[in-house]
Length: 146
Image 1 (spheres, one colour):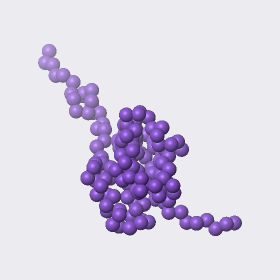
Image 2 (image 1 turned 30 degrees about the horizontal axis):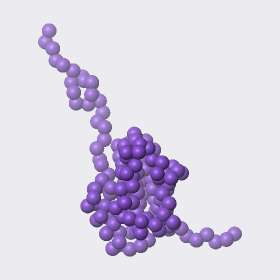
Image 3 (image 1 turned 180 degrees about the horizontal axis):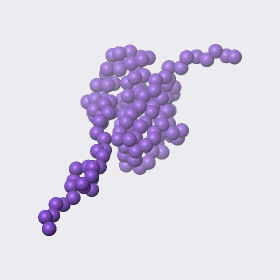
């Protein structure tokens, strides 16, 4: 058997509400695929630009050397898109930290953080559970004395 070259790859995740996206970033030619399909097939069309944001911010010179494979599950359309963009951004930062150098990783991270903090840091807000005595988590049924 031929000896396989060790592939340089990192796996990162992005979360938003109940949506979880996993990004596998490896050395390659600049392909970005989502659930096996090209990234330009993301629906809805309006939110497609949100997925492109990390790539547009960092430019082709940084994304041209890596392949990104994405998987996403859970949540709704919007949550999935926000989880995807976070997974891409965190994956690129992790790849540069592990295989390139710390200085370029810091530069990338600063660019992303300056644009939008949610590209790197997850949003901790979750849906609050419903309680008795009302129709939702906080609202109560109207009180009546007669």
